[in-house]
Image (cartoon, rainbow, N blue to C red; front, side, top):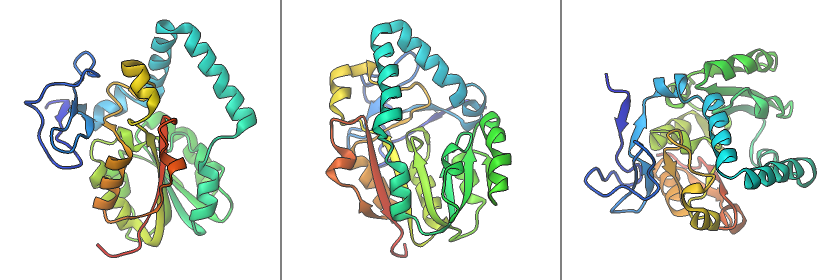
Length: 273
């Protein structure tokens, strides 16, 4: 059985196999820009089993950081220092505020939850549930989350979400996850199914339209091979969210401005597909 999946454009369905690879391709990993809608994606993505074994986050993140440190040691040192300053003093994480503003009390799902850090910090009005493809990471957090009335499933995102009943969740979190998902539209369809009416989903992904990507090129922090398989712009993110039946609840300029490497969108299930 092949360990690599051939992907077509997830936004418009165009098969770009005969088109030239993007200049951002690396080694055997082929990045394509769709010839129809211009969406940028990894064409030959690893199957879920490889993501669990060989490309799990706890393995690739360390390798990626080591490569960046070797390639640009001074810049990496400055970046690490600034991250500490931001975390300690600037508190730039938008997620806690977005959750408190937009999620009703009840069941909350974090897809790609790692060890459950976000879930563990939710208020007592929420019952935490998570899905994590890494067996190692999911096992670490599951005992803690069970004490809060929920659980973490060790599963790929699509299969894991499918295990929940219809209209089970008040809110869903996908923070730094959808760029990893080989079937993002299918996953968003499942999220629509398991959300209650007027339930909301919060998504954070790297912004391919960022000025930093244009300046840094192939050294941009948003490129990760091969576990980042989707490279969203505000336009393409909006397109697949709407394709799944959601309406946009919040997607202001401050959520997607080109000076940031990331963007945030809050979408709502306010109608029947």
